[in-house]
Image (cartoon, rainbow, N blue to C red):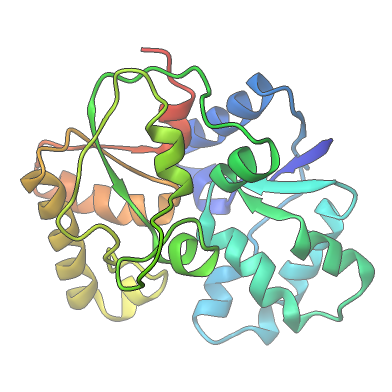
Length: 245
């Protein structure tokens, strides 16, 4: 299969190690990976702020760069969700529909398309998993605590196979961190308080490393951790799954 690696703009600018880990992880799994050099933002920030019409050019550019691939894979649930569910503002050509239907968050792609859970990783730490809203309730990467039924989690399936890793149980397993894209700018007091609550839950649960599949949420939580000098390390799940410590 021919896979186009989508690296969101904020990861490209601020967290290149996550992009590298995602690429290396896919290559280890035998995937034929390509990185379109001209790719830009998926348009989510404009969409979040109510300017969807102004984002059409960005969305169409995304389609142009990724329309030839069998799958589009990215290490950000919120960006992939935007591609799958908000590119309806474009004319639904066969190319647009192909891109929307074949866009996958990294963990989802590994488990559902490649059929892998044990990636040969080792990471001897106590880890807390932050389940981001777009991934959990949008892409259905896991079951929600407020819904009755069988428990499942794509991210937990992968982390539970990592040698030496101890996945810690949180008190509020799928509560929002308060980031919400531009919500963190327009409602900073509420956003900060929600983020502090999530960080404290991890601390109370004796977590050493906080992880998740969406680095926008992790960026928000890491900022709180660093500002308050709290004893938590924040890492994207791709870095852990690519680790051989």
